[in-house]
Length: 271
Length: 274
Image (cartoon, rainbow over all chains, first blue to last red; front, side):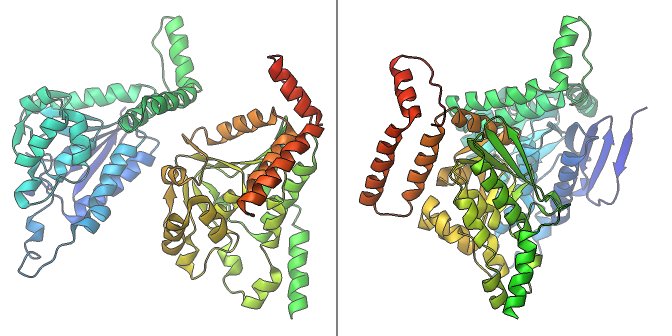
């Protein structure tokens, strides 16, 4: 019996936890899941809860309908952008967007983006902040910011060069060119591409696999890899020694070794 | 009025309720471990706690079997500040006569090295208590600051003096006048903490370092601590003279003979604290 729990009370996202996998669905399909104030705050909240919830091992982020997420809701801005309007986007990032990116990166659990369609602007940035990206063959990726005179925010200028290298990142950000799923795979922007109809099932398989693995080991590995580009080898070796000391003390490590010796399948408990 | 207040305060400070253990102490070989124990209020430092803390630190300082002291809180908070509720409605005269920071001077007079194991919030009085310690091992989750400015006051237990000496005017002013918190990484860069380690290890690492130090000559440890602290109190030339005298003083100890002989004989030394 899968334990399912649907979180109520959200208007712009859906949250459902089944078998330790929490799926957060951005749910404004009529506007390609564009990010209005409400959606960004609800997403922050859902990520915070998923991070804390002991019944959740893996988080999946996806979009309802045809799009993953088209970024900031420009329609939302129609009323504001009249002559004389002075936007202050810095505080907006601090309040709405940056907490989402930080929560995805800092969470001690793997976060998988199931990119079902277009991922543009901050929507792309959210996908890039995730630990893995599985894309539908209908997905596309656009650093769309330059078309409205802005810079790629929500971590894109940090995550994108780490994923595809500086040269390609520069090209994608400066031109705002669209990347289709096949090219995204070739660039290393996504981990795999699957037929659109199979996306949630395939993502589910990966999520299920991760949920069955030692949770502390996953968390420590995520933490180390997230640090690696900022550390020297010396610092990273030190960080690994600390993390391995922690991992070595887990019950799951002991179980893994004993199961190997006894030639049986390990049963991990996340402890 | 004043005398009444003073005696009442004195009663609180000298007779902490027996069932209220606001600090916990244990020993691990030559290392004395003191833990702040008001987890429900993020280890807010009230006068009773500070008195118990001073007494315990002095007890370890007197204890011949203890060479190094580790002071810690819990994972969520080292100490998130003073007990604001306790101070909110007090008058200037009450604060002045109560002189709650006098207890703090007892902790700063402890001669043995103190290693702070800091995780989570180290704010206000918490930051000030951390700065009295000699080596600070911080968890990467540590958040350090002097946010007194947010509630209409300023640091009162050494914040403006020790923070400025530790990190310089620019950062001290930034932290004290805006009330912003430093991350562990920022605090390390600024020279406010000694080392930053993953959250799982801040305590074990502090204890490990304490043991490492406890294996060295205890008299040399104490005098070296005294000499470093002197650097903040005096001119360079006087400090150099002071250091030199302490250095010569160590030649009157058996530990110096043992340490240097062991080095020459290429064997590990056995210090006795004599």
